[in-house]
Image (cartoon, rainbow, N blue to C red; front, side, top):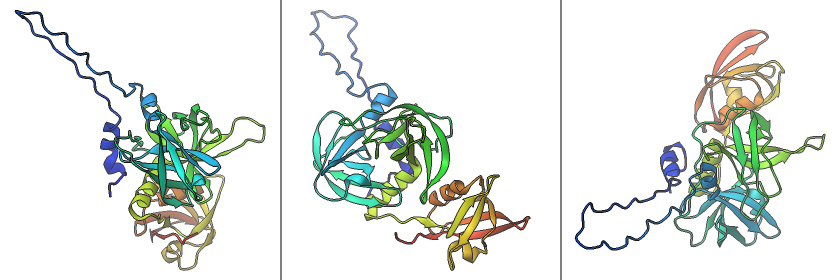
Length: 318
């Protein structure tokens, strides 16, 4: 099965590049030359955001609809798990064509799913950004062709903990049906997949919650290859210290953190060589790895600095 991770950025990007042939003419002729046929116009938009929009689809199931992005030319689509509860599904492409789809697999933790289109060929895949988006990055949310459109905004924050997933937040519009749709950077690369929104108490526009591109790709790869997803696991619950670091609230007995010697009350200040400014950073580092990876944990205990080596485990189901 093909891989969709960082090794595949090249072909994912190349799939988005259109070409136009240029015809030449002879310098001298003895007879009037035949009228040349016009060179075919490219059907791929040159604007990177318009080009990326051709990889965005609408996924419909019984009584629900969501957006999605094309992963492969032969019809794998990443979408929200909200449209995969059961029954038949149809996917409408950017050009208006509708195809039947079947479920490949879902991941409850990230609320993502992969479906496979029937009879699809030569689709335009999305390009996923190889690096995480930084706060302040200009982005645009895009919804499927049969749903309310997205719009411009910026990344408000990264490494924000929502449930058990470290996500990015953006003020790009998150309209009904946006779930499963992409957040694009200025180059048209997917930096996140929208899974929900937070409605401010003052009634202003909601803040979109998006799974980072690297995590979304890893989930899609596993669903395509195995039909299910395994997540790496540290085995702690944490809280924000308000001044940098993530304080360990509980340690799961026998889990990776417990075996590494971490204790409740420890403040994790670094993980895997990356400074930690809150629980979301810890989760981001862990979810970027895999079960079996070894990471260095820097922490303070009763004001004294310490260091430990932890081997990530596999998160329990559920």
